[in-house]
Length: 169
Image 1 (tube, rainbow, N blue to C red):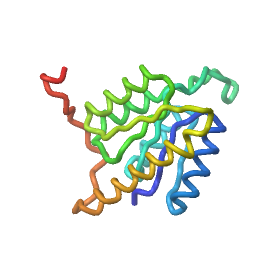
Image 2: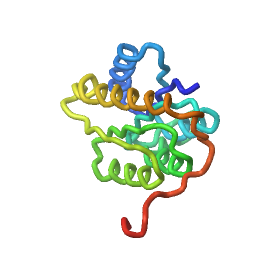
Image 3: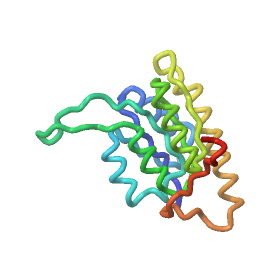
Image 4: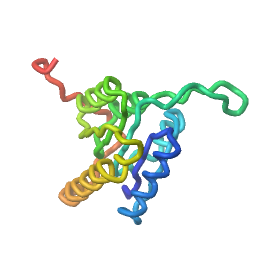
């Protein structure tokens, strides 16, 4: 059953604001938060088909110590590249202040057939409980309608076939 909103976000304040909005608007859904790409990638190996919506940040901060060793948190692009190799199965909302990186993620995912939207953070956390939560609600409503129209759920494990034609390159 697809009932998870998978969120890549390293800022604790944003994470808390997003948790509150999801709980307020969608109390029956599960939100799974990751502050780094490697952990999200590991989780997705078994959980991709449970995801109803992805919300991805790009910049995840500098390397840090984890278990006494240097740890690279990666970027949202790591997740975009992983998903681009999979069959599109749900919408993706990119929320990053890094315009160039967010656009690159978007192009990668759209070329692989994923439905992608983007919101730009603004005014500290104001954007989370206004623009972000509104886009999440719209995407989930659209996803629910499309899922009801399908005879069977999408096979998330298949590889994607790029949609970009020679004319678009």
